[in-house]
Length: 289
Ligand code: NAD
Image (cartoon, rainbow, N blue to C red; front, side, top):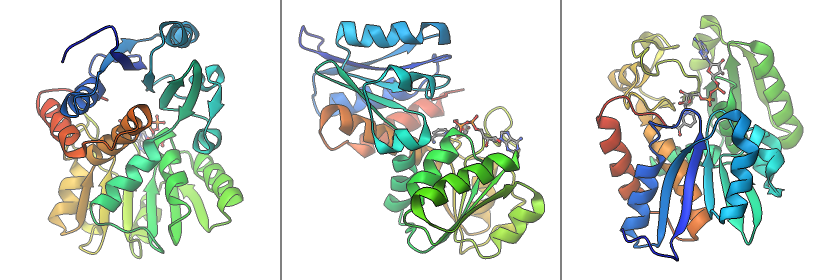
């Protein structure tokens, strides 16, 4: 990589940020395509967010990923929000086009692509989504148009019900939300085609936890666990043992990063290069996005 006076700067802002995978993934892609871009990580505390976005304008930083805890707070500093960001109330990608800041959210498209590219079609399928946090909301919004049925179960049932109601208002679909009880999971799994864990259960260091007992998993189910640290969660291991098709959280991570890359560069993302870069960093200890 040669840094010159013309090099475009992209980055990720968050707090904490030290273990982010994004610089590894994005720089691997820039290098592979010989693009004159560089990607850095910036630790930005909540009190400094407004200054950070001013800095993006002042320094002409070309693009940013936005991660915890800024995804929602950042949108008031942006000039234009796409329809996904308007619905979700959170952005994970900013493009600086001639001084105007555009907000996008690529989490949902990342999850959608992760399934599609791994041979899992959503059309007319029943999806059971566990969680109603930021990532779950993005996934539900991205899936809503295609699926036959979506059931959202969350620890705080009212959050799942609110999300379902908001989606039904936009899409006029049959989306239901309820409490994440063992009986609701068991009952909905009986005729579900796709199970998505969008909670943080199973994430390092709680690697032996899963919301779904192994005996409820079956061969005709596709299971995506969006937790990517560890790369193979307990749910993913149990699903594999049950003969189910398993899509790892790394796939969503790669595809949301690829979508951001394409927004910044206008070039098709080298997905396989990005995947290998992510997996090699994850194989060294304790990585986080
Ligand atoms: P969030 O804090 O907005 O939501 C967390 C969700 O987990 C909520 O629905 C909460 O109810 C649920 N939850 C937490 N502990 C629980 C428990 N013990 N039992 C039941 N439910 C529980 O977080 P988020 O941004 O939505 O992220 C959720 C997970 O997804 C994290 O592990 C994050 O690293 C991962 N993630 C992965 C990607 C990817 O690209 N693969 C992208 C975004 C987030």
